[in-house]
Image: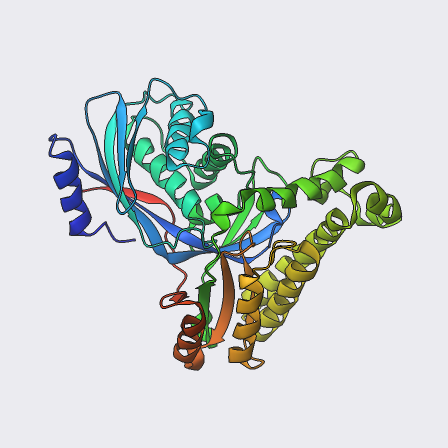
Length: 396
């Protein structure tokens, strides 16, 4: 992954001046959930892909006890590194991510030191491409390099970022976003063992098989729907708890089948439906990985269409119940019109607005982008490529 552009280095100098300390560059890709819609937090399987959109940052030690952080286009903030406790007033802010990652890095035995950091993003905010996870990882890699200590592997860094998002930011996410961005490339991840997730990477280019990956920002910011998102894992875990388990991966589907009547009566229908989605989707992840390994794009696309149907019908994370706005559902319907039976499309990421994912025949990409942009605004749709590099840093 290339170093940050000269303009970002110039911005750093303009904003913070020159302390004489070495400059560090950090880059973290966005991610696309290729398969596994809300399976990671239940101990299931996912396929993630690192994208050619990213957070990039330039930073340096400043000789103080304060982290001074500036985000191009969003302003800045400061963190007193002497106080790394959770701050309720910072929940759902970038400051909470910086403080949380500082706490995690300090727990590795590092001594926190003040630094200046400026960052910019080409990841559309609130569109389900995990910009918050990328920011967490960027802070983590910066502090890893700036504060003396041992190197941190991708899985460990991802778990630090997940804890930060859970405990400091206040979002009960799984590990998919952080691990996919830390690893880079196209990766199958299994979370049956949450302490040591199994990972496997595959060199695969969808365009070699005749299809382009397109993501469409549908104009409904899912960052404002944290409560709706949080209900998904909460309801799945309600089902697991009935069987004395913490996650659905630990529940015998046959035992679930025998208790459906009681589960509906005690918990309601939506948790039951979401549990049904989990087992269906997890099976589809494994089949899609097999298809990718075999180079069978047609099987992959058919299974992707099945996944999209499961998310809409059973997981119910395409539209917010009772809300008149159904941007993602409209986007899916319009995308299918443009695809005319070819390729595949589905809700992407956490759902509830955000973005949809489409695999578009390469010869139709320009027409697809133009059509979706005409309905959702110029630049709403974007053609992405999978990149091999994950979260990384380099001294300038």
